[in-house]
View 1 (cartoon, rainbow, N blue to C red):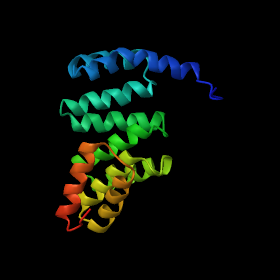
View 2 (cartoon, rainbow, N blue to C red):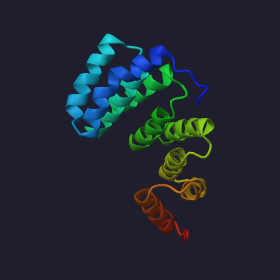
View 3 (spheres, rainbow, N blue to C red):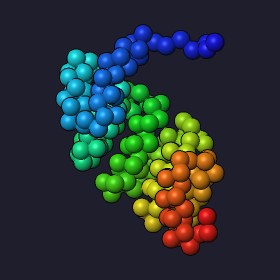
Length: 165
């Protein structure tokens, strides 16, 4: 039995976005966007609404707006690991390697062995051209036993960098 007691406000925030998560799983991104914007209008302090809004925005190619949604999540919920990782990837894709590294490092401070955080930091360093740091984090990512597809991608990156991993 868990000693953790869930905060009623946190539970309400989760309940408010449940339908949106289903829409995201069904790849109904525009419908999820509309739903999440309504949730935010009703409760502008719901960090999950901003997080899932970020995911939906990212999926429809609105990277700047996704970045802003992930940032809003981290302001309201500084320990939200997923938001930090997604923010790192989004910043990297927007060309902000320094910001991506910073957010990835913050994710690692929350979960030092998290494969997704290691992956985000490794790719951020790679985008900055720091192959040694990228290799360090990407190899640690592989040691964390990630999903098959991601490990194949990272092994290809490392091979392209001259590593035999």
